[in-house]
Image 1 (cartoon, rainbow, N blue to C red):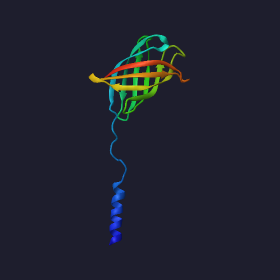
Image 2: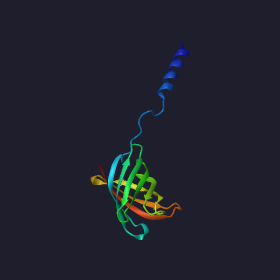
Image 3: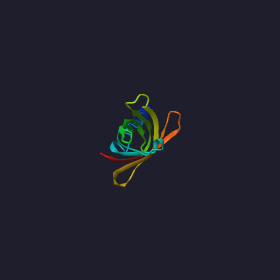
Image 4: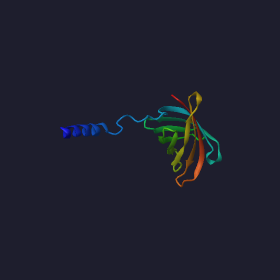
Length: 140
């Protein structure tokens, strides 16, 4: 009888310790964010529009248009629950050889009034920071 009791308790303990099983905390920035950006790339102030979709796991995908140079492209990466973004920005262009992909990273923060602002660094393939990019986004 004691063996049966020990085995029953052991089975309950093993079955009850199934590891986390519940949902993880969704990223607090989940949703579609639209707004503007400014950058000092090439020592010329540039502006544009941006739209980014953030999934519950923090995965982000978006598009942008640089209205200063009439260039567009995509932004891909991920956001941590603390707002840190790491990803890439890929430029598309009609001129041969003028597109490319740079790394984009930095911290975003939600502010009062529903704004989502971030100051990010854009680094070329060689790791040299080529620009600071400031975003101001609203949800929706």
